[in-house]
Length: 67
Image (cartoon, rainbow, N blue to C red; front, side, top):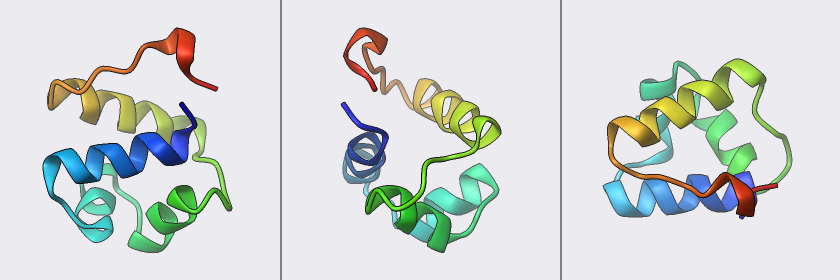
């Protein structure tokens, strides 16, 4: 699963906006929008924050299937 699909899935499951996710991760809604549209990958630090956010919300992705 691509990162953009993970972001969309997490937001849909948690019923949160791009702005809310951005606040949780310490970035802007514009950054989250760019991820969702596949225009820009996350930095290493933000990707790690995203993984922790997912784990904290019991959303687990199989790393074997990720790109």
